[in-house]
Length: 162
Length: 121
Image (cartoon, rainbow over all chains, first blue to last red; front, side, top):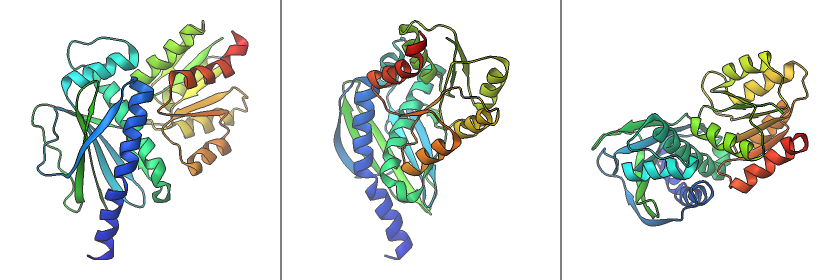
């Protein structure tokens, strides 16, 4: 494996523990909700597991993407727990709340990778059953962490490239 | 007591407003980015300003620098995901008064708000 590819793979792998810690911390602090890692796998296919994706880009010495994928039910519960407001359907307020949680997860995780001088993008939301999110072709081994929580299951996907 | 909250996330503005309301502070203006924050800042006198860092158009660091160019001593508190030492130093050098890293507990937010607005309530 050449140095560049190995470095990308190492960066992706080195994000696993910071992301897990960040998810648990963010869910506890902001949602008063415990989250538990269920499994870790190499990402296959282009569709995130759930119909709402909050996508946060990271740029710096390496660039990458983190995707927070949640069900509609979990998204509604996130809004409810953050601002104590109920929504019956996915609104811009629900998307904003989910995006803010994604922003916090990515921000807290990147703090553990300070040597990469990473900068976060504003979160983008993609909605719809079976929507696809394509990583750039040079992303090395995107990974997916499955979580369970009191608001339901969700996933975090991530991958890095030069 | 007049407070300005600048954050591109409506969710975060609601959370901060609710906390301020519980402290009895209801005179609150909002801005979605640094540009709109500067419009509010130039048109009003604030006792405290809360700002996010990562925002479109003008980010929180630029917003802070623009405020300090006016030589005002108004407290500016950053509430942000930017937790790395190098980023915090940038904010301190630009004149930030205090710093709260997201995610935060409700108590941590309340503590910061009380520290900066409590003495005026």
